Length: 173
Image (cartoon, rainbow, N blue to C red; front, top):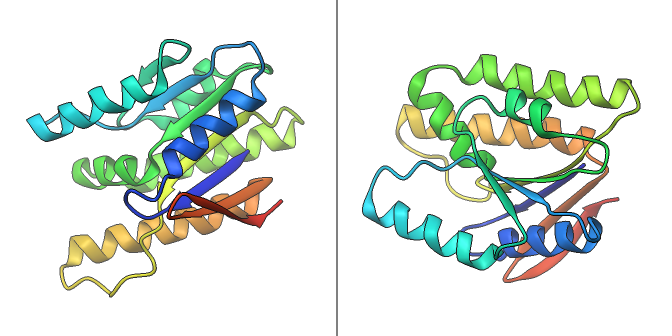
């Protein structure tokens, strides 16, 4: 399992895609998208991301129930790139299911590791802890949730990489 962090437009998604393609051999990797196209700008982003990935990738969408989706699609030779955790956090906070979904994701990660079936998962997320403390309560909850999830996943993942200006900086593994 790998956690790939970076700021907006840092190159983290591209780096994650390259890693997944290099590691999965001739198999088709799965892109597990957490975004929802709620406006024209987001629809354009989704179209651009799909074009960047190309036809080799299988795309699945799951804005809320990430652990359940990962449990359904993960086999021993399956590579899954989850992009992105911060959109997933936002979705969960918006509908009030964050604590439950976070707990289920970490439990699924722990279950896989305990059974010796650690999956080929690459998690992409925005590093939001380098900025100022937001003024609004929801924004502070988002930053806190992101930071705590990143710490919990970083502890569990084999590799953690921070991407800055398109340059990967290995933090762990």
